[in-house]
Image 1 (cartoon, rainbow, N blue to C red):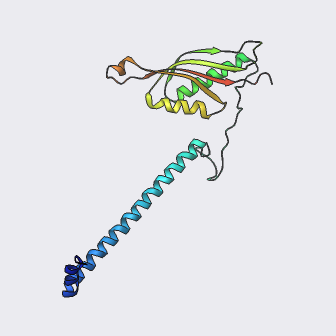
Image 2: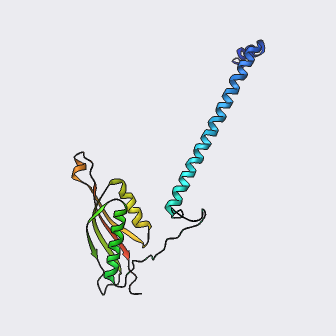
Image 3: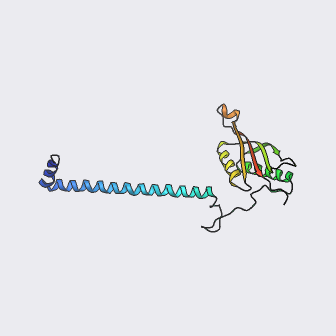
Amino acid sequence: MSWLTPLRRIVVGSPAGAALLYVVTMIALIWAGAAAVADLAAKREQLSDASAQLAQFAGRKRPGSTAAGAVATPGGSVFVEGRTVTIAGAALVQRLTEAVAKAGGNVLSTQVDLPAARANTSVISVVANCELEQPALQQLLYDLEAGLPFLFVDQLHVQQSLAEATGGAGRLRVLVTVSGQWQGQM
């Protein structure tokens, strides 16, 4: 109680000291309350951003949806479509080429690996060599694996171009192997 004695003298001894202590206490309480409210607002904004990103990743929120609470389901088949395995391979090349173009890149070459005529598997693979900017690589991979038909990135080799390695603004050279399941003749 020894440290309270000088404080008690100030508060009890002078009305100005008591008023000053009251004002300081009120300012401290208001500051603590404002800091708590600001922290809650920041946490709420973070939660809103995380929820929006999760909804986008889950595919529930599509641009241009008609109703605010409507769940948009993409159309199409989960399988690579085509009457023949050759047509299905061409459709897979077209899907990959469109995804690279959408990401702002360009396809340099493609190679289709079709299943053998008597093979038990009906997996079609495409190896593509393309160029694109680094930020577009994540967009490309997401577009390939999140859309329809179900596609899987089997291999991914990324190499920076010579201009970027020497300090210039270059593009990435990407060698990607994408595969999808062909259902066969329908």
